[in-house]
Image (cartoon, rainbow, N blue to C red):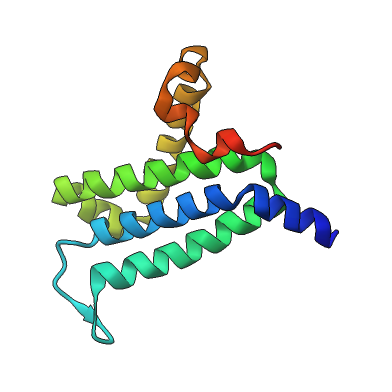
Length: 140
């Protein structure tokens, strides 16, 4: 059992790092407009670190317990970053997402589903960006 967990973690290390870094970037970008500090740390940095920690642990657990969801973890990380960029570019949308966790979850999960559909298309295998994503290198 321990050997299987170790193998799955080793196979998914790029995915876990990718999801964690994307979550950090999304946390920072999503709160760049706020000039607040939390315990002396700027809110964007604090949010990025907190988001990265939570998402990193979730990605690690998902990789060990449900390795077939690796591509969805990756798509969710990309959708989360896209939602943060959209929230930064359109402050009204960002405010609506911050005030409604249901809207934020819908945007991120819906975006992940769209990304999964796009990357599952046979023509997408030829795109170098798609081929270099971490989930393409994990043996399920």
